[in-house]
Image (cartoon, rainbow over all chains, first blue to last red; front, side, top):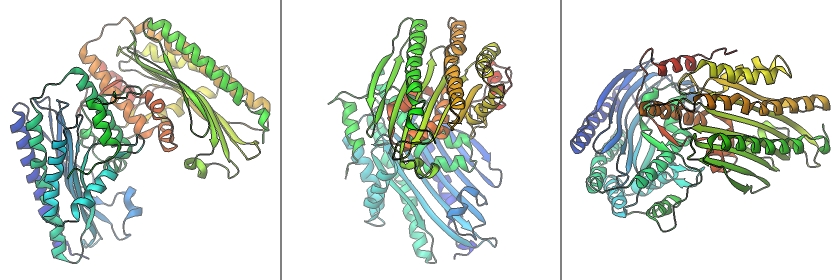
Length: 308
Length: 308
């Protein structure tokens, strides 16, 4: 397929590092108190990453914004899913999760990545982009859900009008706690396998779309934080947030393919688990009162909704 | 193999109900404040259970002591692991997890169960007992670990001197967070597939051993609670307990076969997840100071130890 020098890997690796800087600076500026600390780590077998963590902020209880660029021999756990000639892999991406203190501010997750497989001569035998962004509110403000989806839809529409409906639907199907018959949150975008081909322009269109989606993250999320940051909340509302954070943990540990792949392929635990919320609760058989704000949230989690 | 009327299922089902009563009464008496509430539930397809939950006690933050007795068509998810003639299944057992408030008191888990498969005429085509009990301390008191293991070993030794070494080792291999290279706790017993055969006396010996192990639970655990209940603790020690409870969640959601089987076979979520701790924390890359009590615990979690 593609020769080594036609791979988008270097330019995309640069892009995710720049996006990491932009997002971390914007979150620090908005928080005003906490700053990110960076752990640079190396992977046995090739490559490494930059894990950036903020905790104990004015607004953000825990935020992780990771970039990694790893390579080496194709991990055993995916060998039966890839071409036999795929001796080596390369993967780079940004992955972030933000857990605010105030339950009126939603948790957000985003992830933009590129993966490629090479034969022993360095020729690319397969490669693809993937990613997405999704919102997990604890109290539902419909205008926030609309703003988040609209911002992502605008980024999609600049590339292909079929992207948003397809990737919104994919997101709803992916971020579902099947064992609870609940969505994890109110969705956003999820896409994968935007594949490289011999058509260099098509590859470049994929990359351009993924980078535009990445650039839409801050405008999609920050205005919601600004809007909700001064809202008061009660200890009971904080408790509800922690109960719902339990569902976040359930999704990530039971269903999330990225997490499970990381664990099976001996990834860096602390970077994989930076997505887990700081404080979490499980209560037995808790159901919100009908008509309560908590029940209003559950309505849109039992059945995904068209927001735009 | 065995005819229907030779099955130990009825007598074992009675046994686990009596054990549930004994354990709940003993825990209520020791707590002195909270009482268990019981949810009786029915399973679509056959049978049901009695889920008993205590929370907000003087000593026990959350305790669940469940009994179920379920039957029906063999679940799809195990069909490839059982004889083709196994049209119907029956399962009964007791399962309990106790999360104390005070981090000086360990969390405990125990489970004693019987499972059988029948052909369309009701003949037993396979059947076995399983179970165990294990302790998860947050601060290590070696005498508690010794007492817990010694009590279980005594129960084992009354039946077969090879039981304790075999089932202690099985427990250490089972309750391991492989992704962390850590044990979940300091172990105890784990056994499975104590199979029925045409030798009725051997079946009865299995049952008698499992019931003795079940009867050893209270004498193994209660003296530890009594010993530690009045020890003072700091908010930092509580936080350490909640961090370690996070490992408990990781084990149950990622590795525990019972939990994953429950989820896949559409079990009752609230009963399956009663094992999850009430309040939990995840912190980024936290390591106890060398030589601290927290580090002393970690030493025995990195490498299982012979306690008796």
